[in-house]
Length: 284
Image (cartoon, rainbow, N blue to C red):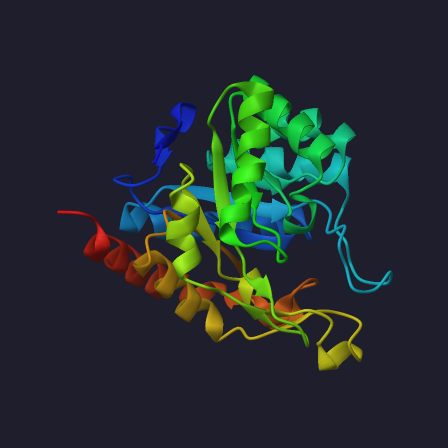
């Protein structure tokens, strides 16, 4: 399996590299809150000696209801992400939803993400891959909730054939089981790594209960917050090379996916445990 490097940040992801932490907030709510969350997580990761990438979306294009909060949008969102990057001195990961967003996003984000529902959209994947490669970044592709782990080979093949390069990280985030539920098969971590790409676990979105938040009469996604640490620890034990998680000072007041979000105050304890699990399963 390839070890991928972000040379400008002196970071790497893959077997033998430190556990990469991609963490922040679900969707941008304000610059001040982004800086608060990013600064706290940066400090935790620095204390633990873990590589840290700030994550947040500028737009949540896939929402249960047209009335749900989506974020500040491309222009203001990228401005906030650039401000976080400059002030904290950390790399950024954010997602892209449309072909014409690819170059603008790749100019700010060091790791550009393809959302799970869009991972088979060939034109979007290729445009984003080319823009990301030209900007010197890495690509993070979430495995669709409708795909088996080995189906990700087709995604990697598209990117390799279009760019001639291997710079893609795959992300596990659960499989739709029906009736508002997702299931994570830990055997899939190793299956995806066999395809030659590092693998992360999106432990936050994997505990979602799509369309099942009783607070909004099923007009938004519910979640099982208590399951996030369990899935994160299990995936790292299964060989995941990084974790992707969302935090908030007051999760119940988060404007998007609060039921799946973790309290910021608990970040140090969880990440310390994940570091220990990762160290325990590394080859001697």
